[in-house]
Length: 184
Image (cartoon, rainbow, N blue to C red; front, side, top):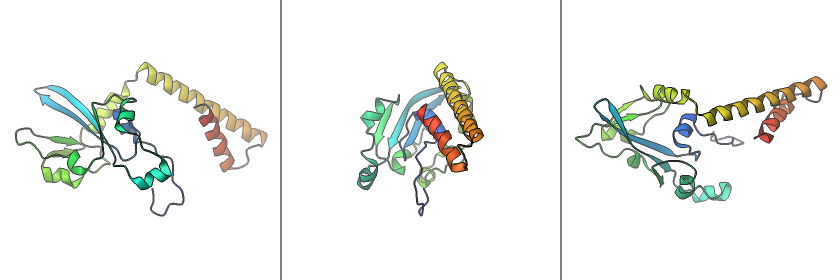
């Protein structure tokens, strides 16, 4: 959000973060731990860090989701309330080389460089693209539903424009969004 914005847009979680965690809480962070043993990668767990609770935000946005509420909706090894850069990047163990993978458009906290792990954006995005390429039956079903809803919104928009009911871009957008929202 811009410092001088006159409105606040609805929050939309970064797609790769949403894919990895199922968490849509703004300001959250995730650590997926794995170890390399020869050519095998052993998954050690996923920790989601929820942001610290800001009492001023509660007045405007309501109570934030608790770790217990979130854990009932997502499959995560551990959910922690509150985080700092130090909790995300603990000191590197001398015998265990650490590599931090991040997306190309993100910037790891400066504490990561202080603690000495190798930082790279070379592999994560490619790995996410490969993982997300394959769809489950549920994902295909949801994609079909979204496509059907979008097609119906386009048809409603064409009918509205053709009949003269829709006369400007604002009305066109409102009709399109309305059809999509009503259909879920």
